[in-house]
Amino acid sequence: MALETLKGLEKVGTVEICRLGKDSATKFPNEFTESSKYFINIDDEQNIISFKIQNGPIKENGVNGCQVVDMIAVARHMIYGLNEKFPCRENAITLTRLDEAILWQAQRTANREARGGMILALCMLLLLKEQVTSRGEL
Image 1 (tube, rainbow, N blue to C red):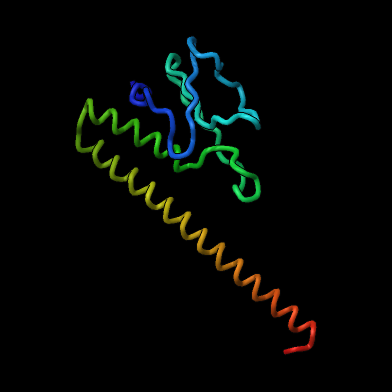
Image 2: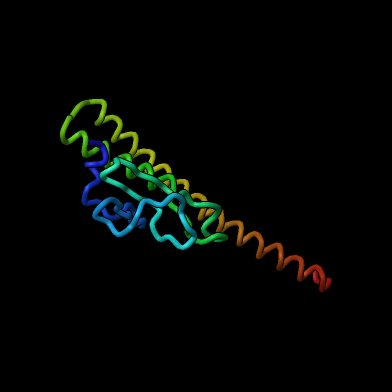
C-alpha cells in the first residue's frame, strides 16, 4: 500500500525514477551499473523500492547515485500519501520532521559550499604568499 502513494511520481528532486515490472521493458536490476541513469527503482508489482547511493563527493566522482535527502523526500511523499488516506497526528508530526530534515540537509549543503569557497580563497592566499616569499618580497 505504501508504494501506491508513489504512483505517478517520476522524479524526486533531480533524480529520475525508473518503474519496473511485468509491463516494463526494464527488469529489476540485481546490481546497479555505472552507466545507469536511474538511482531510484520502483517495482510496483513486487512492492520493492531500491536506491543507489552517491559514492564519494560529486566534484570528484560525478553524480553516481542519489543523496540521502532524496530518500527522505521519497519517504515524505509516501507518508503524505498515507496521511491523505488515513490522517492522524502522528503522520502530521512525521511530515513536519521530514520537512525539517530536508531543510537541515539543504543548510548543510549551503554551509559546505560556503566553506569550500572560503577554503579556495585561503588556498589562493597561501599560494600568493608562497610566490611573494619565494621572490623575497616579504
